[in-house]
Image 1 (cartoon, rainbow, N blue to C red):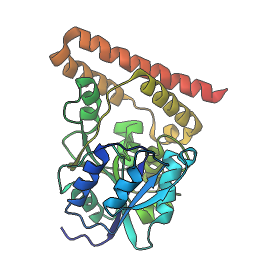
Image 2: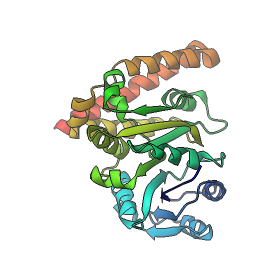
Image 3: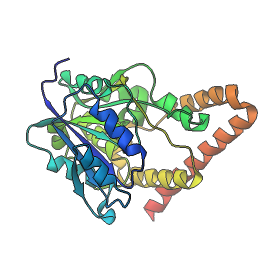
Image 4: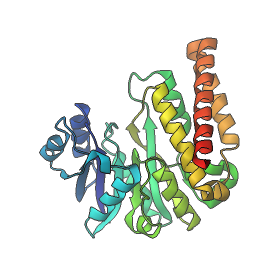
Length: 291
């Protein structure tokens, strides 16, 4: 495939660890020509910035206190060269063994209506079923291009987009107002703005990366409370796209069927308990944001 537009890759980092060099090596072997490679590093103390420079990446260092998921990504957008047409955002903990993944992801922008695209996230090798099951549901094997018309079926999931492995047409990103300075759901926020402007979001299942986290109660608590606050502070998203609706029940049915086959009744009890915990944290986040 001929890439007609210049592509930039951005990775925000903080103490990325030993595996970071493996990711950069995999990116170095990608079939996609890349014009700009930028790391925004939040003052790592483990040599992350030095590893990035070793692989030829530009590094912009900021203080840890300056970081926010949205604000730091917007800082990166403002640092891009003028001729960058597509920007790919990755997180430091993904792996990309398929050397054509980036090329497949960026290929979706041949459709001019597509303003953003995200790839399929497979769980890391050796991940538990509790880390894998939601990834499997949220990143199916079939590609799809979403527009506002899909909100009747998908509800708020129409805006689903993950900056762990996502790309944006820079022109459309800027027209949408860029990333807000927030600490969660910056991808959903931008996707919503793009969809309301008549643009499309592509899910490219053929573009694969490995990314998953083992569930930890503290992490779930913080994440879902923050998601609840985000929704309460941005009511336009639910007003425009609706709630999760039937998608939530589809996920639950998938979880039960998948976990039962491997972990039995105790596994079902565990996954349902995790779901209830996340819902409680989410609802509490919405409530706290109101007072």
